[in-house]
Image 1 (cartoon, rainbow, N blue to C red):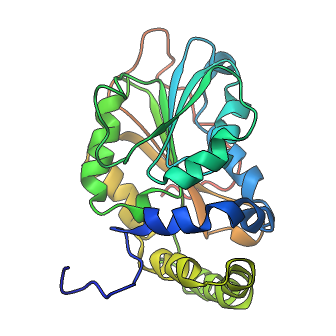
Image 2 (spheres, rainbow, N blue to C red):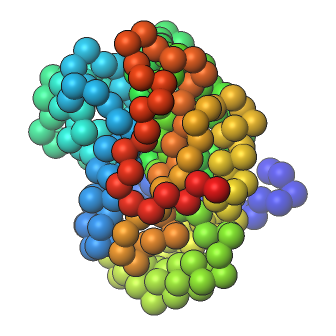
Length: 263
């Protein structure tokens, strides 16, 4: 145990086990969050995937119970989608739902993707509520970039409040007024939801994370936030693998839905 770890404390190193414990109630909790599913669909749409995804291979990292997979399927209904999560119980909840044959779920750690199971290159990656839970974010981003075709998009759908005192205050008020009490009521334990509150406060600010993406080699990096109460709290961080794939307009803009925070 590292000096910073505390017995029983949830952190990036053991959070997948906590998701195992909360998997059965997870969908009900996130379903109570106004805009949760719509925001995921917005991030998937912002990837700008052409032709409804026909002929594309997409990767959904940190798929959980399948909410982000459904969003990706909505944006690219004709794509082949591989959805991955480190929590076996969250995956079990996902696989109980109805999916087309073009979607497959795989148990795996996004920080240690087995090349035999996840042979690239992919035409796009969606990583929703994932990066905040990884122990080495730079290494993970480099690995994601290496799995993408030239010019293919990465969309990181994630909380980021560090740059805004107002966003931190709203996030804390919502967590302690709604999310943590509801989590305790539904599951008998608030540990995972206290971790959620704490991990969001600790995560990179918008400027730091876009800088991190650029530093590991992503191009055309930009960020767009969400409408509603999560404006300037939840964001889509977009970047492209270096290079331009054949037949692609290099000047084509990222779809502009939402507020563009790119400086």
